[in-house]
Length: 331
Image 1 (cartoon, rainbow, N blue to C red):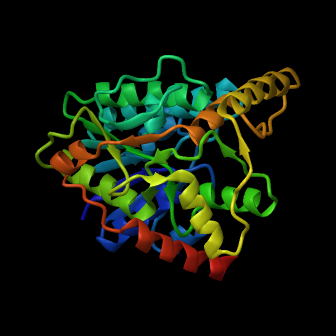
Image 2 (cartoon, rainbow, N blue to C red):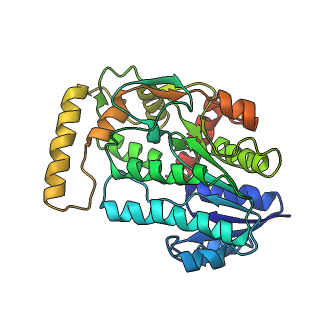
């Protein structure tokens, strides 16, 4: 039985990791901004605090055998200071606390967006360089944080980063609800040609990859200092997948289109306006979102397969069936 600490353990990915750890008989401590009574009822120790607080993190990681650093300031809009504090300072504090407490393994939840650019990414691997001109604070901060984690793989601490793309499944509070809300309101438009393919990552497979990475760090260790793209076995055509989900839920399919150049320009203008007005709510379009909706971005999973032994447990079709069943029951 290991003592495992999960930062952001109350979130979508974090709580799914926690459930698998509990099923394996591990002692789990969750670090988050809030209390999580539903986790405490399952025997989880919940520590409420700021992950950028070094003293708090030093105490929280005492006696830990393994850390999953999942916590992050997500989204694509907001002040740089918030992203810097949580994603960079918080990651630095987590690494330092691991070192101070002699924690042997740290698995970091990253994102493929760290290599995003203006063009298509089709079947690329982990040799792809980081984005040179990130279009949002989230990506900038995650690049810095991932580099810190991978560079920390030394001196008794083994580290690795998992890059899941578009995480979805039952319990999703982000991607799918947002799609459904906009789809029902008729506020979705196909950006570009609508033929772009993307990686998607079913939640159970994301958890599987994290656990495989942890097992590797605590044994062979050849995943140390490396990042890994993961996803389903094959990419999907983004707009076909979205319309397939809508069809299951009796939502009108997305038919309206907007050229990428127009969406990108509109996003740039809205970013300027929202920044000038110091608005905290996210613009309806940004340059980053325009590119994400129009470009292909799918990745080679060969390294994850070869080094971690990663093969998705849940197929895209089975994942969709589980998702639709959950949505029909809960919505």
